[in-house]
Length: 325
Image 1 (cartoon, helix red, strand yellow):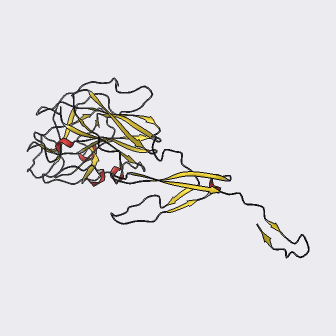
Image 2 (cartoon, rainbow, N blue to C red):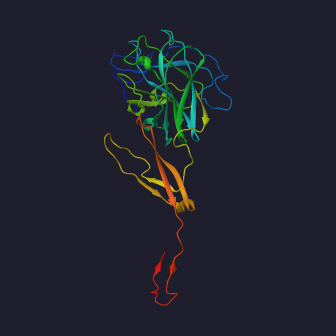
Image 3 (spheres, rainbow, N blue to C red):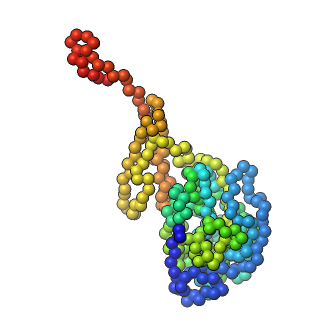
């Protein structure tokens, strides 16, 4: 299972209707709403855009993170995993906000977020956060609400797109269930990142619970968040050019502790790309889970010179036959 999770004081992840919370921890819960809505049309898709959508347009229930018995919700990351085949710009994120029996999400503040996982291994704990805070207020329910975004994806890989329930930082009462789930579309691509006690963390890998809804519920709940996105080809930022064969790095990945450093050997091999004489430029791109420096571009320049022919002397008297350039 490509996830990390921990049990809480109440014994783990349980259905809200069956939970036996003792008030000391948070768990996954559902039951905030029964019955779905249908929104199969995609009015949020601009002409020429790339569409990222996993759901069928309807939701059967909604999910929350917190202590349902004490009716206290806590903040968490709610994300869908999409795959980018190359550099692109995520231009909008659309979320369907569900109705809740205990209260309303209207007016609540959320943070639209995106993460980039270069190795696309199905485990986002090392994914780099893209962009800065994008705080929005929820305006309506039971329809996709579209938010403008500007997330630059540097290259092919997995992209995790969704929101952070900022309004639940420090605990929010009553407990609401913000994540509409389409149980008819089982994609194993809808993720939660949270902590069993206290607030969730925008640094995705720093959360103690990171996993898909399927895994974290023990397959008691299977489905997909109603979170969509649109994108356009080419990110327009650093590290968007083609991969060059003449520049290599070793090692290509690793872990560095805070305040420490690690050496990376960079090798330029003109023969690997049959480079002719002239000047060449490229970028060395470093991604990390540092939210402030998620992507670092280091410019690289290379000059290839044409070697003159080698001549051996001794064509005339007095020369010793030595060779030189």
